[in-house]
Length: 120
Image (cartoon, rainbow, N blue to C red; front, side, top):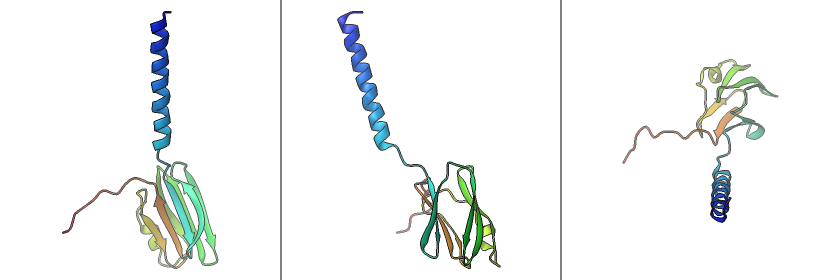
């Protein structure tokens, strides 16, 4: 190997290290689900890991399913079951609310919501 080959390899390695560093600094934290009961944080769960979360409190119980990067309320002890009929959530700011059990499930760092309409 000649001197120019070593310099070229050094430059390529240097550029690769710079790009890797920029990628690590700008990497977005994964989407997560924040569960609160009566305004107090109950737990934080990743949308990237499939799991069943049993939410128990003095107000009742809820079953939250995290699957396919979405969260859905699958069961609840409340009489109206409105939270069970809400759609699965995965976008930042989306929520599932169970008023009788005082449970709020919110997405943070998820997909961005698309703008449906602009009003003037």
